[in-house]
Image: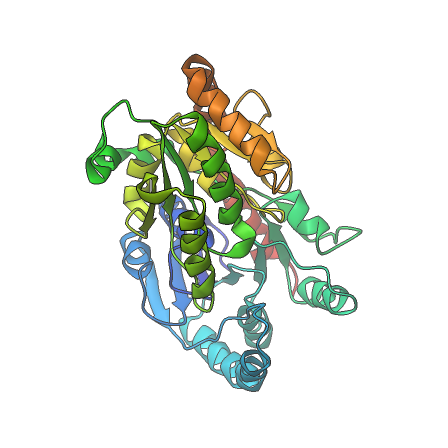
Length: 393
């Protein structure tokens, strides 16, 4: 088995082709590992917005239809997934044999196809746990046992991701957070773009939220806080950046109705997917405060690193991945999930005391640069890949 980075071929199996946290993390992983001489291939279910970014990172991109495992309350959807599961695994096994990588890296907890196909193809397998597994009696322990059985290494974004699956951690577990190349992220910055796009003055306070519009991301909490802040700061405006995942379009409609009912009117802008990938830096740089309001534990919080890298003060939640990223009161502010009143108070405080906001922003940027650097990430991931390649089947 080849193990040096310069000759290693890693095949990433990724369950969607959109642009979200795990998709962007994959692109940045490929960009980082390219510097080692690693050859990278990716299998996606279809063409989509992330494809060109992956190719630009040097990856060979292949397509194989794969229905994504979702937690939607749809019996027909789940039944369809089960009926297509074995045929999809067998096609993926054949694809893996044809590509012939040194190892397979499944880039999501819900990427079951990659795990089973790697096993059938006789390849070392890394299962990347990027999500918080729901706690379901009987099913979660069975799922956790499958992850353990089918993984050479279980790579987790954060300790809470592992705790959601296991009481006692399996020996294969390695916790490694994602990284962010701050210089590369800031390279495409167009200073002032957000304010130009919105048509507002340079001194207008802007408070923002950025995520897929999925209920667990807590945008409704952000809107409740916006209504409270708006009453105290009549000059402030608010932005929601992101769109609906497939099947959850109704939540976005609910949010827009809620914003109207709260009387936010033109002071709240829904930006859709206008800012993503290279343009996300323009959003983060234009904000005075960034709010991260997940109501269930976040596996990590890559979007926090993006805001911190441009010195924008962040407010997040005391749960999941943000607990490790943010030093409460120093490099950001942490609040109980779902507490719109507390969020509004902290946003108002940062708007009233810009020196405090600036100090938190500076500390946040320093923390991102020191604790989530790309060189450290590349060194650790290279060692993990080498260990996987050397592990007995």
